[in-house]
Length: 300
Image: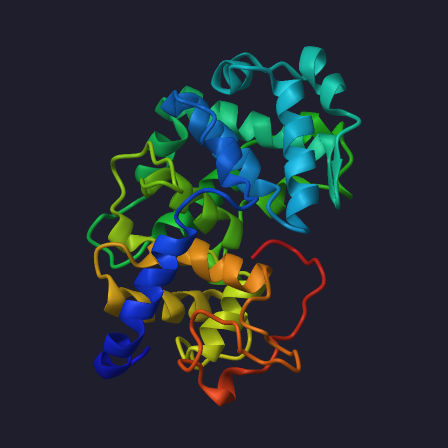
């Protein structure tokens, strides 16, 4: 975690970066989530969008549009009324990288059970949350553990060789950063010109940064973490550093940091270095190392 002195040096630049990116003019799945006014629909779309948020953003948006076309204009109602016999065939042809239609059907069964038990995904989440804990790590653990116990065998028709629904329910205890779940929480808990919000029971102060390649790269350059390998501890440490800048809302910087990296404005690995970077002069030379790449693996 960065020192108070370092935080004081970074805060004006990161605040300015947040304002510059907080306009909604860049491609991002969050803009699809914002199309939905009703909180019940929004949390379903947000979970689907976050679940597909891996790969190139153009591919993510194309896959999300294709899925939502199948779901229809009222996603929460679709989930509540979902029937494997009636609706799973309409998902059969869906593909997003290694996620297939059967995985989506299984996910919808899980979401359906959450709605039946708790009234909403938020209700299911907060049943396993202790608001007195410093972050949402334990709540994510409980959420994914309980979700993974829901029976989805029917979606796979007995094929136990493929149970891809597990990728949607990562757990901090397995070491991974839980990027997609943290992204979902950011969208649903925060509310500004980027994140639409909708949930009331979780404080933005307890969110954890959705750690991806771009946030890792920029975070290490800025000295927000000492870790080299991506994972839950790195996500917590980058969040703790950002909490020094804004204790009430540390993940508000995530969108800007991610898109700074996505657009290669920091010049990482380029001959021009950071000549055009809005954070020019704030990077630490030791941070300019690429994080190790990872092949798709079991959910963490």
